[in-house]
Image 1 (tube, rainbow, N blue to C red):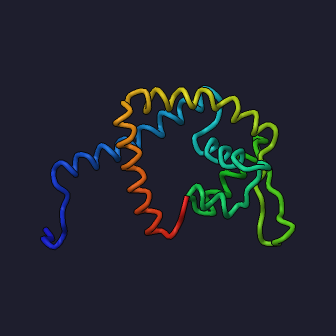
Image 2 (cartoon, rainbow, N blue to C red; image 1 turned 180 degrees about the vertical axis):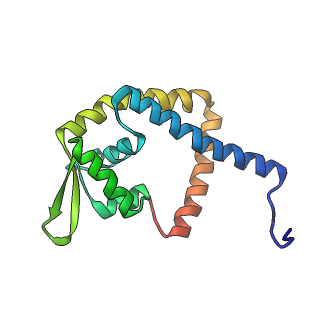
Length: 158
């Protein structure tokens, strides 16, 4: 065993394993809720959130890939599936022949409007209803600190 490595303490290892389990179980539960309630996957919902958070329901493909932290090929395949279902469309960028926009369609906007109430209920039930105000503040502080480190290391913001 390499003794130059600062191995995790038993407590750190247990917290880390619970964190990994949370990161597996929570998205799976939210995905099931969205599928059942609205026929959307969690990645569909994430794409639609980014689109509907913009003023005109459109975002450059590269910006969407960066926001979602997806590889371009994964995003392209996912957008194709969503486009086939009528949830979005792609448009060429008039200012940049190599660039493209993703635009939410009326069907995509209707889908997220249908999905959002159930999704919010699930997030409240699974996460926030379990936390006291002090625990919420602690969770916020921890996530801000870890995100700050990750975003600083990656040279991103968000």
